[in-house]
Image 1: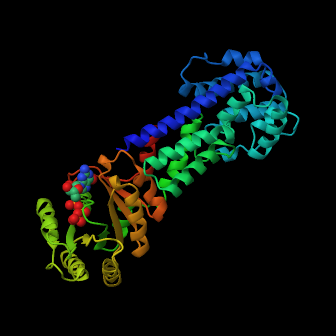
Image 2: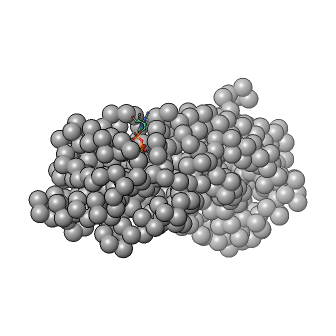
Length: 429
Ligand SMILES: Nc1nc2c(ncn2[C@@H]2O[C@H](COP(=O)(O)OP(=O)(O)OP(=O)(O)O)[C@@H](O)[C@H]2O)c(=O)[nH]1
């Protein structure tokens, strides 16, 4: 699932990490750099550095940790209060919320202290130290890494961001979503205090993780809890175009609810398409579920209404209502959905589309949501989608969460959409 996108994202992170690592090694070669920062003597830095041929992706972690440790020892040996305060902070801030690191040094002449504090004082340190040596010393960089501050200048990052943009767009990530991700990465890597990050290790990966999470996590709610807490029967109506796996998803959800102790009745509100009754009936038979159907051409609202009445009379927990999957631009279809809304007032309307449709799925989600507001989405055929663009884009574009991924043709191939898990699987833990 989403393997092509995974490869592209991993290419981005390793490229940027290599650059940061190269910068760090260059800084190591500048004997005055650390002292110009007023921080750690060059020999102390050299002792704590990894060999130049070490693996780049791990280097920055080691450089950060080893050098921060060296700084800590250095600080322990050197009494000035402001200096050790800052160093202590750099060692502990990595495991805490970075907003908490707001101590301001008393003595502004100590630029290393400034470098380890909040952004505003950081900018002072930048101007002071960079005036001297044209860049930060390795120890200061490492300290910034350990405290989660920027070590990468925007201009250095730009070509990588261009590559990332291409990677996202070629994976069918919607343009505005790609821009949002790029802005987030830039912000996280170039000077903003990062939120929610606990690892001192992989800054680039964490910056990307955070940005992806922010766009994917839009509108998430606890589906199971909402169903459990709603008055019964809970009515869920499904919209989306033909052939994307809507009927199969309804059947999968019937199985999903059964696994959670909830009974269901199916309703075929797709009275437009020949064969739709038979298709849903087949699933109902396989799953041993009651199904309500009317003749082809009859009123879809009446079918769903009958299913709700049946559920009330028979103590059924959930009504799952299919609708005709004609084009989202069809006024007729939208009028049908509006009528169902008015007369049945479903608890949820879920939009179903296939992940493999990429940009088309994203556009349809937007248009369906505009025409008849949805509460969430199911993306089918994620198992066959190497790109992941729709999975990343739909929530941000509609403001409504993806709730499930279809991951195969069997009834239990339906996975709750967990943004954190998705991001972890895309970026690696
Ligand atoms: N690989 C895979 N195939 C799926 C998934 N969901 C559905 N399918 C297959 O996609 C095909 C179309 O699914 P349907 O459920 O018939 O599609 P539909 O949207 O209901 O189509 P209409 O009833 O015509 O609107 C079927 O062969 C399903 O088995 C999925 O998550 N993964």
